Length: 307
Image (cartoon, rainbow, N blue to C red; front, side, top):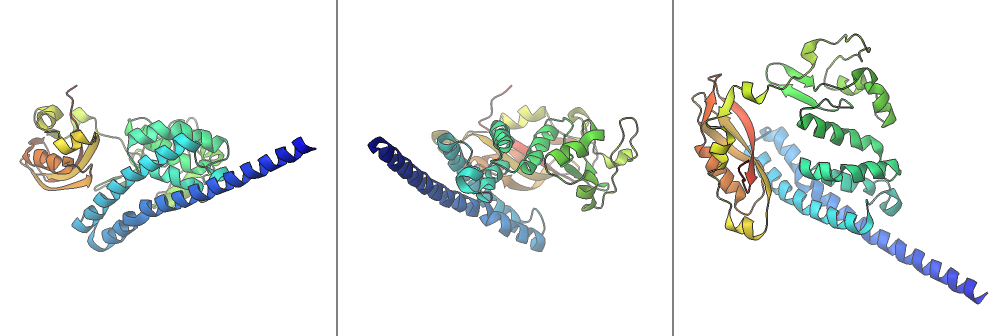
């Protein structure tokens, strides 16, 4: 009887400690979610008022980029300690927070944690309908067909198009399995009239699909290739001391004569990297076969190691 009482007491104490841990973790995730949305929501409002890519929009997203990297570090610590913080630990609403933070970081982080996110969804710890966006984004980024049809591309003068879908006749089967509505319903919000093709016939026009231009056929290319630009980068001492690595995404206009103007940092690293990326890109030269001003984005690596 004494042993039974001690066992019950131990279970009660363990349960109480676990509940306190959950409460503490839930509060931490709630704070991370607030940081995840703080500048992002303001940037959406700024983009509506001043336009996407405006100074106000860019300044807010620079701040959000810093917050995103800080949040990722916190989520990585949580995952290493608890595993994925899913429904069992923090409830349905807060179970989305870690996914959102990873989704808002670069493709390296997304690819690294996708197996953990998938395992959490398989166990019912994460809503599986969240996964397709990340899966498709990673695939299209590699130039591969997407699986669920979530990724679209807006082409100037053409409009919104769909990235190619692998085994497209069964796309709705896959979407239903992940808790998503039929693809034609999803695409209707962008004014796209879509029909799922059969295994032998596709009723959709070819113009509905986005075909990426091969790099060697692009009308805008760096003179001497990327190495001619990136080899001029100086890895800032403060970034080196803090072991800061990654990419600074720079948006710029390539002029008809191949020069650059209107440079801004879309996603930065801080520690002097943003300023260095702008310096080098300002001096960059391009071949512009179109002969007209064109807006492009380039990911500038820190540190740069010649391949």
